[in-house]
Length: 68
Image (cartoon, rainbow, N blue to C red; front, side, top):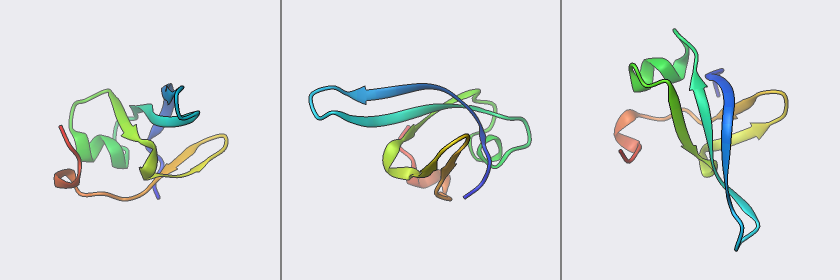
């Protein structure tokens, strides 16, 4: 995984008591910023998250793997 930026928000599924996605502010020059271009806040499906602690580590991906 790669450092991408700071977590800005989280979306939960209350009926299933689980996390649906996280919103990350893409830092300039980061792996995520290179993948998504000028987008600032990126919604990342929780299935792509590898680890959560002080930072969030996501799985590497190709831009064509991501739904718009």
